Length: 184
Figure 1 (cartoon, rainbow, N blue to C red):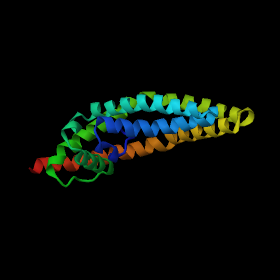
Figure 2 (figure 1 turned 180 degrees about the vertical axis):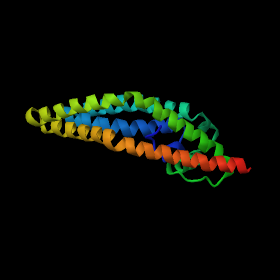
Figure 3 (figure 1 turned 90 degrees about the vertical axis):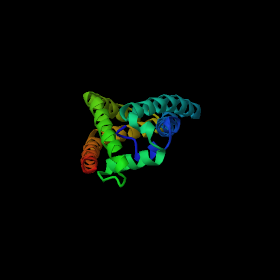
Figure 4 (figure 1 turned 45 degrees about the horizontal axis):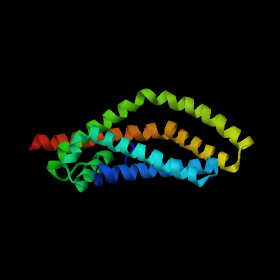
């Protein structure tokens, strides 16, 4: 839920699964195609990963913010956008959903923290794989490994800072929403 941009909340459960699953499936499918050299492998990975990840993430989003089902798409986007930016909501009716979104965002972030050490291990393996693929593999192997390594470096060094910023913004937006609720 933390990695999902606000605009994805516009759609219902199925559309969210298609958007998220399609994006992740496409990226991993391209890597599979580059690595294997077979378009069919990329298509299979796109469908399999896209279907699994899309359904899983859409369900996870609803689990962490169950109140989202009571809001129309535009209001879900407004709430998510305000919370992610740390801005106040213009409508007092959206104050409680901002607080609920903030709670879900923090809960989703907490569930991932115990697994951060796995990324360090995977990064070491990815460096070795990239070196091996560059020396002994095809150009597709080398490119796929380099992209994978870059994504892991971003995940390890950029994402934690960005996640802290998103959580602080959500806290600020929830604080502002709490003031709106206290004033009503």
